Length: 500
Image 1 (cartoon, rainbow, N blue to C red):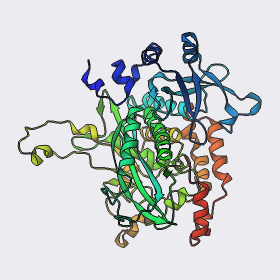
Image 2 (cartoon, rainbow, N blue to C red):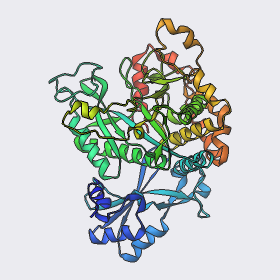
Image 3 (cartoon, rainbow, N blue to C red):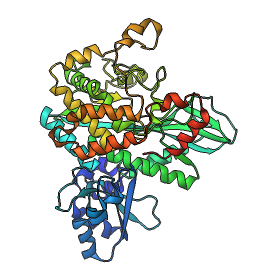
Image 4 (cartoon, rainbow, N blue to C red):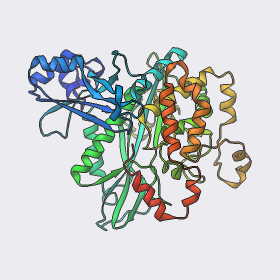
């Protein structure tokens, strides 16, 4: 019995005694038979960013083998706008490595995420999930390394205000109960996500909290561990589904919306990245940020204007990305600096053994802390298409290795001061700005689309669809038009409340 596998929160990993990446069809059938499972669900993301579900009752062994082997047909035109009704059939085929027990089903049910295939049995070129896989493969082909990612999933929990132990407005960061009201809900979410295969780093309450119309709004965050980028998107997808379902059971409302109201913290979806080779993190060299990391950052600096097209996808996104607040608007990067677009967080690069210093009875640990260093893209929010966003970041980081002047770009865009302070005005003027609307993001993507279409990663049809959708909001001057109109702002938030 492998103790590490036995400790996994994923019931299948613990029972089958193998990592999920090694699951086979025979494993799935065996687990279903031995645990008397009567239902199977196929789940797959659509253009609206939500998971869709197809239910199967297991009739017999032959039928179970058939659905696991062949998948099933679905109406693609109802899932994606770029698929015409006249030729809409797609196949969905389960990926066994994503199998988990549905925690919300009354009948014991095994669920799996699926891949889309076209009529010729080929992976669907414009599927967001396949786009991410292509982006990761192109990154490896160019660099010889693996692109990994992890997300910080921020969201607001909304419930009736009980007025007991009120939290300090906009001071909810890492607050404990009873001032934080939804810690138990968050930890319940974390357990459910882990049981579904999510590799969670930690959870905590976040800065944002306020009351509005008799309801309390409390911001929370669940952060993940770095894994292969395609797995990172799957985990975030399932996590959002879990949080919403559990909130429904608790009687809470949930929103991942980037902005709720003026003057209060918006919710981001920060993505951390690291680059691996032969199992070793390449982000540090001799205790400082490596050339590899700086090249990847340079690529993100270059393509940052168009990454908003994947990571900030409705008009409320640009009410979060406003100057002089914590969300970034300037295209720059820096160490531990939360006013920058790409942040290099503390990476345990100090030579001291902090565990031994905090616990004098401990022997030296010799722990390899270099594995923990990441870089963090801070512009995206909960409106993002998770697969397109992480694919876009993989493209940008790959692009950094293809730029002859990557290290010069990294040096020019590095900021080690608070760029919003008056004494740093000259530095601020030198920095490019992120787009301020969906329309502006669409224009940026149009100009930079060649980098995303290179190596066949993003299909032209997908890029066209993203641009068309962003322009359809007609929001070029919306932010300035309603910035002093809270009623209009609330109407906009309500419209996009359940985005992503």
